[in-house]
Amino acid sequence: MKTIALIATKEFSDRFRSGWVIACVLVWLGAIGLTSLFGLAQIGRFGLQGYERTVVSLLNLVQYLVPLLALLLGHDLVASEREDRTLPLVVACGATRGYWLLGKFLGGCLTLAFPLALGFTIAGIVIGLTVRERGLGAFLILAGSSLLLGIVFVGVGLAISAFSRTRVQALVIALLAWSTAVFAFDLVALGVVVSSQAATASEEIEKATDATHVVSVEDLHRQYEGAKDNAQHLVPAAPRRFSPWLVLNPVDLFRAINLPQTVALRVPVAAAALAISVWLIVPLGFGVWQLRRLDL
Image 1 (cartoon, rainbow, N blue to C red):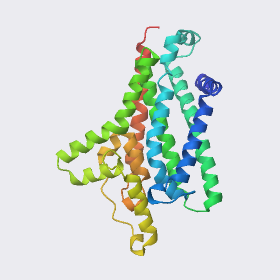
Image 2 (cartoon, helix red, strand yellow; image 1 turned 180 degrees about the vertical axis):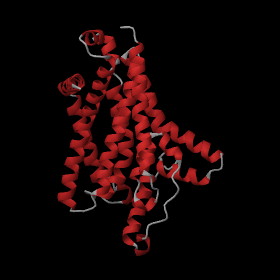
Image 3 (spheres, rainbow, N blue to C red; image 1 turned 90 degrees about the vertical axis):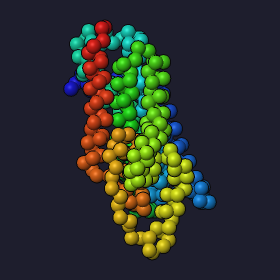
Image 4 (tube, rainbow, N blue to C red; image 1 turned 30 degrees about the horizontal axis):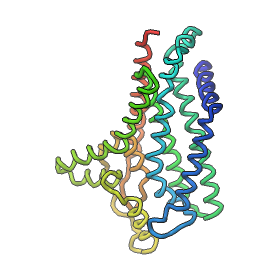
């Protein structure tokens, strides 16, 4: 455990000194601030929003930006050490390959978690003091699920890095993985489900993705507005049956978890926990397996 902690601490300190952490903090704070101020521009409103409105506005931003940052962080965790030929020195000092990989993973998670946690904390305090809204639960769920989404993609990036010989190769594969998770999977899944005439599942996937629901943010804001302004909308709709398709992609699972109650799409806790566990264990397992096969 001490070896893992030392490697993780060194990884975080190296990223901090390089300016990566500070850059992520600035980018994330700016993104949350601008989204909170202008998130209602599509329905003609400007200014700070409450917690629930901020969650609706941040859904698209988080599902695009967090996986990208995580993959950019994870893609060179192993490939950079191979290119610089420092990995044999680390192994020669007594650190096992599995412990070293786990330490690099934890260091990458800490590097990503710091700016995310800081950004959500500052934004939550500012919104609470300015708007004075009590609906903090949805905002906390968004913050926690964003962190889990980032950790999952750090693991995916680490596995990509373990199978790549150079940083450039790892970067290209990481960008392809990001494009697949964010864009391509939604189109393929929706096409397969529609072609199989599974109407309910296709509706759920369409609600939980942006691929074919271009104005989803505006629609969600209008649904939320209607639920607030009209008494008959205060009764929640019957929850739709959860589609197993959503657990195949962590981005879609994240969005389904954070959709407002007006959409009435509930994600079983057991299914979400199982999917997250699989998405964490499988990439790390492949990474350790590949690292042990390397001839240093």
